[in-house]
Length: 337
Ligand code: COA
Image 1 (tube, rainbow, N blue to C red):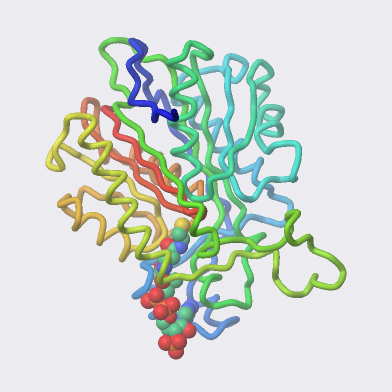
Image 2: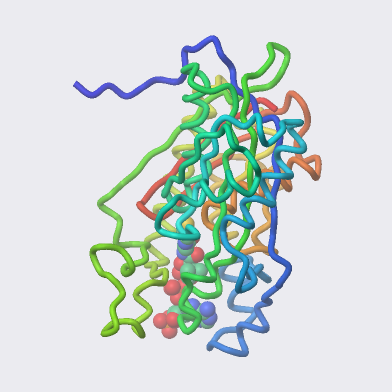
């Protein structure tokens, strides 16, 4: 019988040794979007909280952004690229269908000893990668891991569809995990879940084996993101609340013990609803979606790095990361910093 694995019983503890992020230079404002589709700064800001997003240059690929973010995380961790043992890139916008974007990142970092592969779990990918790599470290297979969320969503956005094009952006975030010393913080609990009955709510319908892009359908935007926004909204709030509650409880914490919640950056109204339901004051919830929009797997990773570098939490603080995405997928992690 299938038995769900409980939280680690391993004596090995895993900490976050460094974080990094990268955003492309080009800023696309709400006002610029309003000049090309039937929308307004007021509508976008009031419905989502987004003011602007970053757009990667034509020759700037997901692996390039991932590499920039990774270098910063490695530098903060004091880990040389050649000593990285595992690289996981979470993305739905790989440079190429194969090989994995992680292979390009391994090459550009010079991390020649690392095993490298991608995972596809949409906006939840970075925390899926955190759980997977934590388990691989506690199992004894590796002593460290570089996890990266990186996306070039501008390449899979229908720029004529106002209901989606205002939401997304490009960027990358990274973190280095390694075996923690006894006095260091650690990842206390992780949670991830999937509901494959809801694949239709948020997807890119074309470009895979189910619906290849052909000369007949090439103009139909089948290779771009489609979403049933209201339905996604409802599930996002419920699933993120449940996942966050699980990791808080399994860590033996109370909501008032959490110094900082770092949620997926999709919609400010979703974030406010989660803060409210978790009974965590808004000032303890990290938000940067006004600057970057929703960057899928990169979003929580970029927010994690900005929160870390801006001093939103300090050594010994408890923090919670929580995400939600296409699949539907969701995940959370509780960390003692
Ligand atoms: N500008 C102006 N009007 C827009 C618009 C835009 N960019 N996009 C949609 N509208 C219109 C709709 O056409 C609709 O008009 P109608 O009432 O005349 O039909 C109206 O605004 C309301 O649309 P609706 O979709 O009901 O708005 P909403 O309040 O649900 O907000 C989202 C839309 C997408 C912002 C919101 O549903 C959302 O954020 N959902 C979750 C999305 C998400 O998090 N996705 C990522 C998960 S990882």
